[in-house]
Image (cartoon, rainbow, N blue to C red; front, side):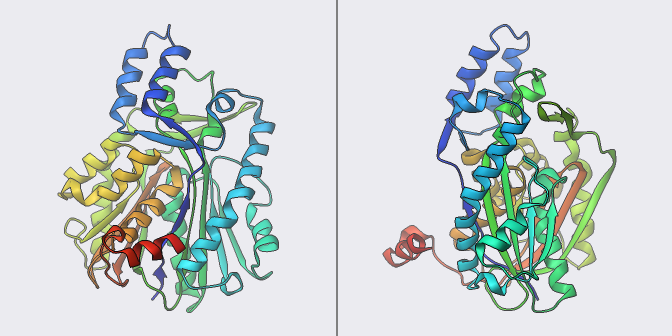
Length: 367
């Protein structure tokens, strides 16, 4: 069985706090008639800080789509190699042992994807299979894990690298002044994440099954309008309420494998916003504390799109994982409305939190 190993995650060095975000909203949109509503919604996101690939003064300037995309390529090439190297180390593999790469991103565009560059520059074999995913938004993190799992099922013993590269700040559009866009300006952050799915060996989450579900008639609820200035994010106000429809789908996928989605040992959930986690807790009948790692990602990094599930999973690993054989669920949600659902059980070594022993502190510093 394939094993999802410990992810590696990196966030940029430029930080914007909640207070910074609220101050900027007041300064930039002082005459906006719905400013009080937007400020209240931003506060309710529970996002205390976010990380950006550029200083805030550069983020707020829009030099045009061409220059924005050039920043995306430059920053991706600068930041992906270290994250990939650490993910490979966590999986105890070298680049030449990887048989396929799944690269997901919805915040910049290149053709070819960045996978050929990675193969040429980072030591991967020329026959490495390529699977770029560019149009699944936040759901792509779950989709990447599932497609890696599918590849390992099709080619037993193969190893797959998953990379998520999201610079959401490069999609900031100063002319988009609807309340939903003002909210998005205070919600999304930037991050790069990677993890290896080993076809054999390794420790982490032993993958047992996966599924994909679409909520019919919602394909325009999360979307991009493609304009001369780039990607313009469009979010329907009904999106936060979709967990009532998706919770039964999580139950359905879990039931296919004889599992009860409401009675598992751990949950790694895409944290698009606090209401998604609150509603899913309610409709699955799961205690809110079961989503602690997803909430921590949201609070400390914001919504980092496809990288959310990988960062929440990283936090789960760093907290010591679970008892051997513990059953869990990973789920990403995004445009479609699509849910990508993964089932697995813990096969890592149960550990105490790193701060409890100096030995583990040194171990974490090295990795």
